[in-house]
Image (cartoon, rainbow, N blue to C red; front, side, top):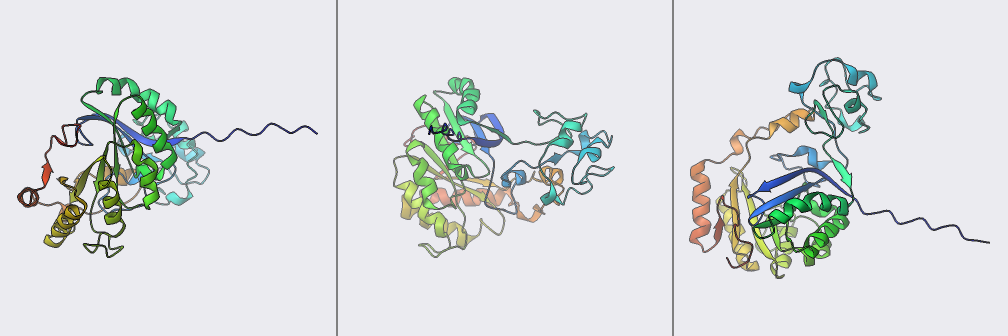
Length: 322
């Protein structure tokens, strides 16, 4: 009795919702940034709420809409009425089938510039790396590749493969993370990362030293023990992450872990358009944006205590000591 052919293993794929081709704000030097889909958090000040989903949501940009009603004719769940925005808040029923995008004369399935957009793409790490490699070649000596999100480490296998490809080709690699995942997500990729951008704020999920940082504190300690560079990234949210208690605890943890570099920046005020595109009400952030004077004071406090505060020319040098 002959045995049938074994089915080939499913190839590793990655899901991403955006690529930024030239930025100096997401790691050392000038970077290509791949934003990977999926996030386990729901920060109230998030500026990419569409990144939270495992699969791509459908975004509706009313300023591009022709009000033709064709999307309503094809939606299998009847989520779209004569006004496409109707029913958008009931997103759990959306099948992500893309029928509305296909039917929309102001949209294209392969474009993010239409009235209806499914921003997430899925491909193999090899295909994605091949797409960004020509740009990386131009940045070989002045930057590299950054994986961000969402939370890049949720797609562990795809992240590992992308980083392997980049490192094997001689490119500098950076990973941006919330720091709030089990340690095994970090150990899986650690050998392929030159620089970490580590989001740090108290999470109330543990009582490490100092209290309040929980799992983030443990993960930061682990990354600081590696030869890779670690830069703490701290968005300054008025009354939340810029308090005296939070700042002092952050400095204490960084000193404990031996991390000396921090990037401090005010909360992004421009967050509402993606919420509207999801059919959701944008969070009120006016009272969460610190003043320029408060941002300057926090930066001065860190600098006065011996920390290197990354300026707007984010981490311009590729090496740890520069």
